[in-house]
Structures are given as C-alpha cells and as structure tokens.
Image 1 (tube, rainbow, N blue to C red):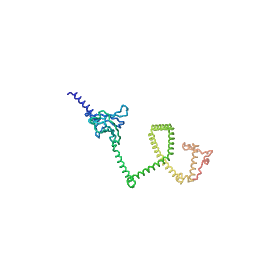
Image 2: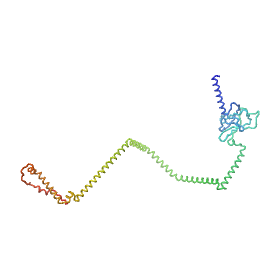
Image 3: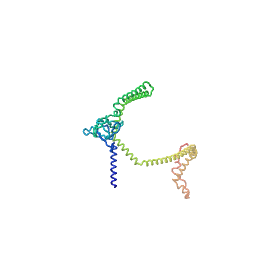
Image 4: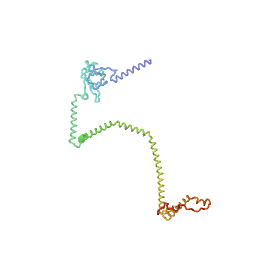
Length: 362
C-alpha cells in the first residue's frame, strides 16, 4: 500500500470521526436509526439544540432543529429525533417543561396506550403543550394536595409565632419583634428629625446657593484679572529664578560678616576711647586738686603772676630783639664796642600794661 493511499485513508477516518463527534455532541448517534418529528410552539422559552426528549424520565431523543415558521414568523417549529424502536401513538403530546429552577428545558412525550399499526410516521407533526415552572415541577392533579399541606404548615407556623409573641413575652421571638418595633420607631423619629432639619435649613441652603452663584459670577467676571495675576506671578518667578538669589544671599552673608568685624573694631575703638576719657578725667581731677604744674598754676596766684610777668618780659625782649638786632649782634658776635643805649621814643616797658592779663584767681 502506497503512502498516498495511507494518507487518504487517515484523512477519511479523521473526517468521519469529526463528523461523528459533532453529531454526538449534538445528541445524535449516526450509527443508530432514528425518526424525526415536528412540533409547533408559540414560545419555546429558551429551548436549545441538544435538549433532551424524555418519556417517563428516560431520554429517547434530542432536539435537532429550531426555526421560525415561514408563514407568520411567530410560531417556532422544533424538530426532534427519537429512537426508531420507540413507536408513538396518534395521541402523543409533546410537553415543553422546565428542567429545574436554573432554566433548563426538556420535551416530555406523553401518550396513552400503545400502538401496533396506527403509529405516527417519521416526519409527522405532534401536538404541543407548554407548562410553566410550577406546573413542570408539580403535577396539576396533585397541586391541591400540596396547597392543603402548605396551608396547614403555614397555619402551624403562624400559630407558633402568635404564641411566642403573645403568650411568652420573654421568648426570643417576642424580644426580636419588640426590637424590630423599636427600630421602626427610631427610624420614624430619625426621619421626622431629618424632615425638620431640612425644613429649617431650606432658607440657609437657598441663601448659600445664591452666595455661591454670586461668587461664581464674580470669579467669571474677574477671570481676566486672575489670568493677568497668574501671568505676573509666573514672570516674577522666572525673574527670581534668573536673578541668582543664591549669589545675592551669599554676598549678603559676606556683608553681614564684614559688618560684624567692623562692629567688633568699633567696639574695640570705643573701649579705647573710654579708657582715654577716663585718663583725661583723672588728669583734670588732679589739676583741680592742685597736682602738677597745671594744678599749681590753677591754684597758686603768686606763681601765676610770676609766670605771667616772665611771659611779658620775654615778649618785650623778643620785640626789642626784633626791632634792634644790631644792639645784640654788634657787641657779642662782631666784637665791636658796645654802643650806649638809646631809649626809643616809645619804651616797650610802657606797652606792657597794654598786654592782656589773666584775671583768673585760680
């Protein structure tokens, strides 16, 4: 057998397996014969393909097709496949029921009797019936019994609650009921308080909203000024950034340091000045006490007069020396014979009285 033939057989087997798997997932076995029937429903309530078809709780087929009827597009035509060995009589009804509270659907085939010859052929239409959730879970014939049992059970529960509430005030049920009633009362009081607060604050809220409206309008009207202010602040920030504040601060620190050194120098100068003033005060105090030459001059009148007279004589001598220098140089320096003294017209001695005198008595 060539390689191509093997590949062809493998491809055929794979395709057949794929088709069989798809049909199997759809609920149809291609290796077994089946009959198909059609059912018309006004509402299939989310019936889906591959949903089961049951007889007495046993699955005999699946839903194979769902489509709208072409005549009105409101009626839904459902196709079901049923095993070929299941013979359906003419009175068969296809009941669409719920398969639990989760929403699953199933079709139940209900009929009476069996058929030998007058059976439905493949492709026939079945009668349709639909049941809701409760009707699907409870047999309508048994519904009254369930209602009676439910009523008796509810009556017992209600009687027990009444007994707990009225007969035994200390029971947990009574305490729970009282707590619930108190909670309702508290809620009612809180609601009344909230209504009072809302009514009392209505005027203030309206005034607040009016104020907010006024502020909003002013802000809107001043938006241009605010924009200019923000622009100016931005420019100032840029200028400050470009002005090298760090260098300015450093120079200011250096100036402060120099000022500190200058202040220290001034402090030292002031201290030295204070010392000098203290010495001057001490010297003046000594003069006032008559100590030293100045003190003697200030306190001894005779000494003062002698010094004053000596000063006048020295002045007269210098004046005469200035006016008649030959009188002094001719005899001492040139060795000439001393000339007789000739008195001046105005004797300097007579001028001594015109010199200023100190009349201080100190």
